[in-house]
Length: 144
Length: 246
Figure 1: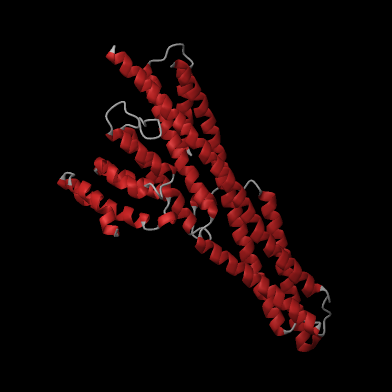
Figure 2 (figure 1 turned 180 degrees about the vertical axis):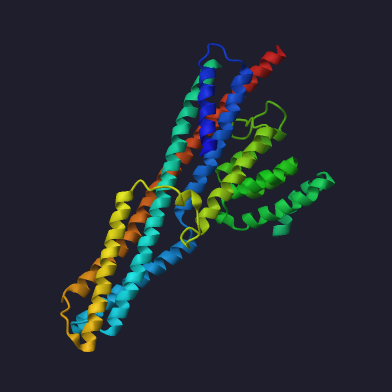
């Protein structure tokens, strides 16, 4: 994201300033406040991701419905076949219901894995920036 | 104590604000009440955004609102409460847990802006994700696990094609063409279908749980980093005030 790139560039610039022998306290304060603002924002993002990953009740209801629907469809087809040795019209209908459930399950799974991957990447990026902030704060402390 | 009595000190604080700010502050207080009414299910970030909005208009309301929010507040809201309380204290005094926040009102404002934009960006996307609503940020990315996706969709396609073929053959059989049906077809198909659904149900769930544990560890680390930064800022300010005094 452009904002994140700009922030990383700003932090690297701050690191360059901190590499100098003498850094005025005003700079240290400004850098510290920027680090504080970044950290607060990261905390908010992490909180959001964490609450997102807990799952929302409405999602769980839909997912469970689809799983039950698909499994019941396949099971009904299986029972129908076991009873008569072939699929009746009802058995085929059940098999079709199972397919729909399977398709929806796969679609939701694909969606969840994409979201999962997206948030895993975001957490990783935050972690990397936090490492940079850690280094910056070490340098700031060294100047005090 | 009724809800109205509980919020009475906050209302009293709002009444002390300039008239032009009262209406807006009252509206923000209503939103805050609704979020607080959710109890433990209240979103920490939403609380924080609403709280910052209210305190931006009536900073003195923090002393009245802190006792109400503290029990359900998460780290972000608590941090804002601590910052706002320490802002009200005379310069140089510390907050209750031994460190004073040095967040100035201008940086607090920019943080509020960040939190607001974050709320809209994530919460909206999640709410309708499974229902098929669009989330451009997620839709636009290419998954790193492309091979897994291909495998998933291949398995699904094979099962569905096999099922459709079976139904088709069965239909032909029924109208008298008597084509042979593979005897083990239906049970194998049903078993594979059930196994696939079970895999879809469990795998994504376990992956999310694992990532959530990582997120909680990250939150813990960020919290300690925040305390450390605050201590450093306190040191800088202390050093500056000592120099000014000298």
